[in-house]
Amino acid sequence: MNTAGNGTAMLVPVLTILLKDYFGTWDAPLYMMCGLFLLGTVCWCLIDPRERVFD
Amino acid sequence: MASVEAGPVTAGEFPSRVRYRVVGLAILLAVVTYLDRVCISKLAPQIMGDLSLSEYQMSFVFSAFTLAYAIFEIPTARWADRRGTRRVLARIVIWWSGFTIATAGAFNYASLLIMRFLFGMGEAGAWPCVSSTFSRWIPAHERGTMQGVFFMGAHISGGLTPMLVTILMAHLHWRVIFVLFGMVGFVWAAAWYWWFRDDPFQHPRVNEAERQLIRSGRRPPASHDASWDYWWRLVTHRNTWPLCLMYIANVWAYYFCITWLPTYLEKRFGLTAMSLGVAAGMPLMVSVLGDLFGGLTTDGMTRRFGLRIGRAGVGAVAYALAGVALFFAAASGQPLICVGLLSFAVACAMFTLGAAWEPASTSGANTPAWSAPR
Image (tube, rainbow over all chains, first blue to last red; front, side, top):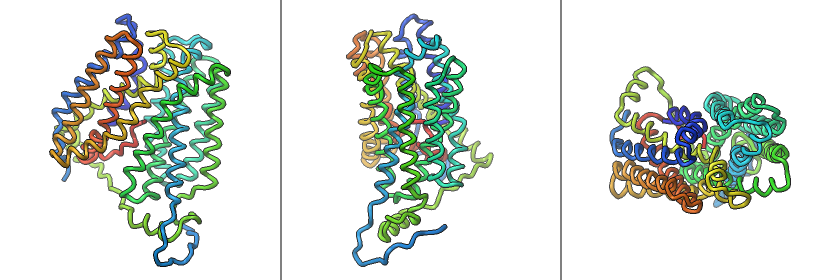
């Protein structure tokens, strides 16, 4: 989980600028984050904390 | 290990409170860590102007820190386990404070990139060192609270830093600000080395009652079984992938705040001076509420409704709220509404950290929350 986080963390600054330039507005990175949180909501629904890998 | 002789135990002796001073010093460390880490985001427009950097180049300057952090976190944690946190923490704080000062001397893109990488190398070890210190000094039943307080100290500091930088910028060049902030770290390192001891049993101010309290609250360290079977079961488990994917949103929100947020507010809304300083710090300030109530809520809901609702349900609701808030933050076009909703979204993200790390740690991925750079 943390590796996925750190891996993407490095991309955040440059992707922010890429999105801003591509869509021509500084709001684009915020819409991107909105999408990520909604995707994350779906992920949360798939997680079942009662299922453990190791008992 | 030479332990200092403590006085004889007298019946009904109250435990001394030296461990809370250790926590106090750790919180001051959190403050310094965030001061040095966040200040560059507010200074970015000035730095880019002076060194004629493009937005892409500045992005890689931000990322140089993150890369170094990812590489050096675990090695530094191991080093601290071997040598003790008194020496290691003093050294790494001097190291990163030195490179904070050296950032003042950056004269082009490459030199700034290197300074930020070396700075990140140092900062990478701070939180694992604090975690290791707490595991020796703080009884298990107090540890969660102390770690929470430590996180809050960091976020409050990160929230106040843009304001402080704004005040200083009115009088000082950005290079001078880096020198000042770096010097703060040297003071902290000196105080730590002079006063702190790796083990409470070596510290002359810890009385016998506190020693017993700490000793009885220690837990044997968890063993890491890193066999192929372990990894295979982890990678193929149904919770692993949604957890990783979900966590990306959290990381995005956080890194946006500590990198481009001040520039965004300036370019998009034309905020300047103090209004910009306050607005840029608002998300991290408000996220303190998320730190404070997130863990309590997920634990309370789990007791009442079970794990699925208490962890995943709480996480899903907080994420949905964050997503909706971000949509309207972007669509509003009003600086006040945008900053308010963005802050709310970041607080929602921080709110889920307790719920997020609990299934991660109990499902076998027993990385402590510390290893997240925040």
